[in-house]
Image: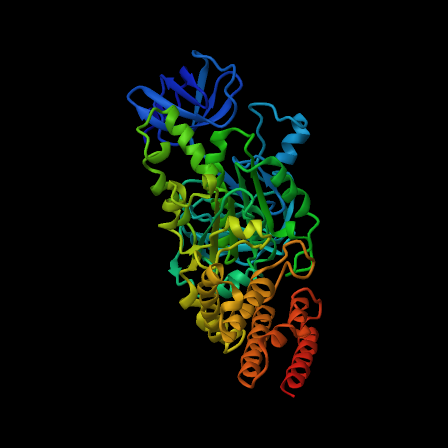
Amino acid sequence: MTQADLQQAEADGEIYKVTGPVVVATGMNPQMYDVVHVGQEGLMGEVIQIEGEKSYIQVYEETTGVKPGEPIENTGEPLSVDLGPGLLTSIYDGLQRPLPKLEQMTGEFISRGEDAPGIDLEEEYNFQPTKQEGDQVEQGDVLGEVEVEFGTHKVLVPPSAEEGEIEEIKEGSYTVEDTVVELENGAEISMRQEWPIREPRPTEKDLKPEVPLKTGQRVLDGLFPIAKGGTAAVPGGFGTGKTVTQQSLAKFSDADIIVYIGCGERGNEMTEVLEEFPELEDPQTGDKIINRTVLIANTSNMPVAAREASIYTGVTIAEYFRDMGLDVALMADSTSRWAEAMREISARLEEMPGERGYPAYLASRLAEFYERAGRVEPLGPEDPGSVTVIGAVSPPGGDFSEPVTQNTLRVVKNFWALDKDLAEKRHFPSINWNDSYSGYENTLSDYWQENVDEEWNENIQRMKDLLQKDGELQETVQLVGKDALPDRERLTLEIGTLIKQFYLQQNAFHPVDQYSSPQKTFEVLQLILDWGDSAYEALEDGAVVEDIISLSCKNEISKVKTSEDYEQKIEEVREQMQEEFTELDK
C-alpha cells in the first residue's frame, strides 16, 4: 500500500445511520475488519461490510445517544489481542479488556469508550535467554523464558517477523514492551506480540490426535474419550448441566492451560466461575487452578457484538500457548449465544436470513472456529502443542434438530448429548450413552491399553453391550414388569443399574468423586463387571436371583468412588464379595 493509499485508508469518516450495534459510515475507505473508533466517545467497532461508499461497523459497546454526523476514526488495523507474559490468571471481556483493571478505572459500572491493555505494560519480568548472539532465528523460535504463575513462559519470535541473525540479546528484568532481542536486519523483538483474532496462527505441521485429554469424568474417559487437539460439542436444554460439565472439564482435564469463555451466559453462572477458580486447588500441581487459566467473561447483559468477538479472542490466546508446545483446553459456553449474536448483527445488516433467522454463513463460521483446534508441531518448540475445543450448545427446548446443533455436529468429532430425563432423575453428568458418540475411540484405544490396563478396551465393550441390553430390557419391563423376566435377564438389569449408578454417575461437588483418574475409572468398572461375573456364576450354580441381588457387597461398590483410598476400599469389597458369594453357594 502506497503512502497516499495509507492516508486515504486512515481518513476520518462520519456516521450516516445508527441501527442498534450496527453503525453505517460514509467518507471512509477502510479494509474489511478494520478497527474504528465511533462517535465523540470513541466507541470501539469493527468494519464488517462495505457497500460502495458505505461502511457497516459492528460497535462493541452500547450505542445509545450516538448520532448521525459524529466522527469516525479508522485505525487501519484489524481487531487484535495482546499476547505475552501476564495472560494467565487474567479476567477479560470479549475484547480482551481486563475487567479488574477497568473496575479500578471506572468503578463497578464500566463507562463507554474505556480501554486498557490486555497485559500489564509496566510489570517487569526476568528474561532468561536461551539463544545467544550470532544465532540464526526464524518465526516461532524460542528466544528465552520468564517465570510466571504456572511455570515457564516461552518468549517466541513472532510469526510475522522475518528470519535473521541475533545481533544483541539481553538478560534481566524488562517490561513486555522493552526490546530484548535485536536482529542484524534491524528488527526489534519484545516479549509482547499482537495477533489478529480472526486469523489462525501458523504452525509447522499437523499431527494425529492420538493422545487422550484425560477429563477425570468416567463417562467421558470410558465411553466417549476426546483426544488432545480434538473437538467436542455438549448440547443440552436448560437445567441439563452444560455449565457444570464444562466447569468440571476446565478444573480436572490434564491440559496445561485452560481458556474458559463465558459467551452470553447468565452473569450469576460466570460469577461462580470467577469466585471458585481462584480458590480451587489444581489436582495436577497443588496450586490454585487460576494460575493456569485465562477467563473471558462476556455475559448476556454485556453488548451483544462483543459476544461475537469473544470466541475468536479466546481461541487466539489458546493458539499462542499452543505455539509454546503446551496443551490447551478451550471451553466455550455457549456457542448458541455466539450464533444468536451473529443472527442479531445479520438482521441489522438486512441480510437474507437462513433457517430460523440465522445467517446463511452460520455453518462456515462454526467450521472456521472448530477447525482452529488441533494437535500440531509448532514453528519453534520441539514439543507438540494442542488446542482442544469443547463447545456447549444451548438448543431452545432441548431440540437437537435446530441449526446450531446440527451445523456443529457436522464439524465436531465428539458429541456428548445431555439428556433432560436423566437430569430430572438427578443423574449427572446427564450424558445420554445411547445418543452420544466419540470419533476418537479407535484412535485412543491403544493408548488406554498401554498406559492404563490391557483389558481397558475389552471392559469398555462389555459395558456397552450391557447398557444396550439393559436398554432393550427396560422397554420390556415397561410392558410386562420386571418379575416377568427370566432370572438371567433380571440379573442383567441389576448389573446395568450398577454401571449407571456407580460408574456413569459422578458427583461434581463431592471432594473425592468430582475427579476420577483413568486408573480409578478402570478399577471401578472392573469391580462392577467382576460382581456381574460372580452373580451369573452363582445363578448357574442354583442360587436364587433375589438372594444374589440382596447381597450387601453390591451396595458397598458405591463407596469406592467416594473413598479417598479407593484401592484399599476395592480390596475390602472384593473380600466381602468372595465371602458372600461363597456363602451363597452353600
